[in-house]
Image (cartoon, rainbow, N blue to C red):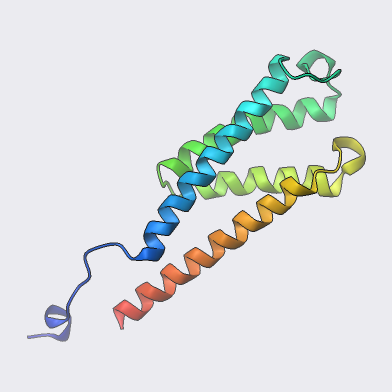
Length: 140
């Protein structure tokens, strides 16, 4: 009998894997919220003087249009736990970070959004690292 066949296997998910699923679902809701906010801005229900698509500067038209599509798409991928969900979220986070931290003269300075993206990325990396180490330890 081989060692692999006689070693006990854990069939349930670990606490880190369960936390990772919940984390992705929470980020999915957050992405859906941001996507809806961008759509509200594009449609014109936002209480700002230039927050209607035809009145926006071109740089805001491009950014708001892309993010209005990408954020709900990221939310769907994260909610379904698809491998492409975090990738689309990363594109959205990188774009907003570039907008608010890299070009504050054009888009304004929203460091709370940038900080939120950094925190989400760090938590994601930490959970993926813990899950990877657990699986590696389980294989050995």
